[in-house]
Amino acid sequence: MADIVSRDVRSRMMAGIKGRDTKPEILVRQVLHQAGYRFRLHRKDLPGRPDLVLSKHKAVIFVNGCFWHGHENCHLFRLPKSRQDFWEAKISSNQARDYRKQLELGGVGWRVGVVWECALKGKWALDQEILLRSLEDFLLGDKTFAEMRGIQH
Image 1 (cartoon, helix red, strand yellow):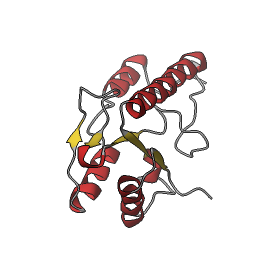
Image 2: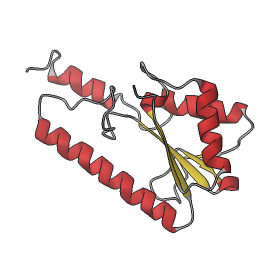
Image 3: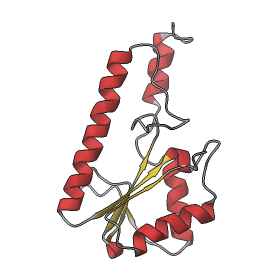
């Protein structure tokens, strides 16, 4: 199937996609900040430059876009029909990099949390209170890895 916009328009659209300070990331930051948690953003000295770093809890949080990180069984992820080889390789390399960075962080004593975009928007988004409870369970608990997803039916 052909793209519905020209190559130049598609290129501009893709170039406008941000890697940090996204709406889902800002929402997670607001929920945590309003609850009294303090954090640093995108620390360059940590593997993968986590979106949020909560040093007091020795925890990091990544806010992953469901498309870019290939969130399986998610209503927000669908592999494009055009250039499938390119997209499969791109998303697979993103997933492999995510896994490597999570292992590296765990290896140096950090606990890793991942909040998926579908937990924050879309038809099965979590309520902010439930999201905060899930984040606090991770931050105050002893899990080394936690994943916050949208509600699955």
